[in-house]
Amino acid sequence: MTVERVGEGRFWEAHLESGRLVVGGLEVGLEGADPFGGRIYLYVDAEGAPTLDPTEWLGAEVILPPRRYTTEVVEVLGPDGEVFPMPVQTWEPVNPELVVVRLFALPGFGQESEAGGGA
Image 1 (tube, one colour):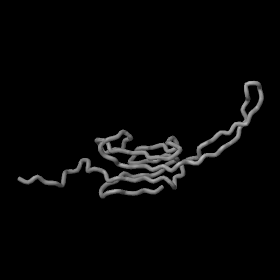
Image 2: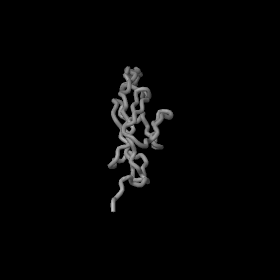
Image 3: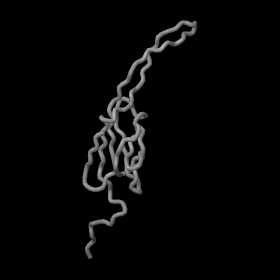
Image 4: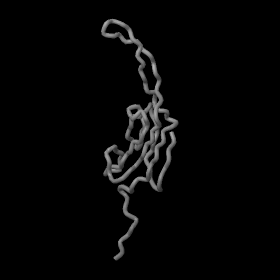
């Protein structure tokens, strides 16, 4: 897995655990994602925690590679009792080496603003 950090400041931590990606404490199952690859976006909620529900702040982007599949031929029983070969495709697990996690700097939740108002 490749982790990229964009911006300056605090970032969530990201790591893989048994086929699940954990970003900022939120677990994302990779095996249930689109087998043709794609992107998963994690947003920052009002408390600064990760969520899959869109908000005004993007906290992470997960880029998944397309998965390979294997084909196995199985025998199925036809309506008249005859046996037919049928190919069955099974998706291979996500290759964790090809997963890219792009972490974006988090907003300063709970921090005082550095910008001062003059009097």
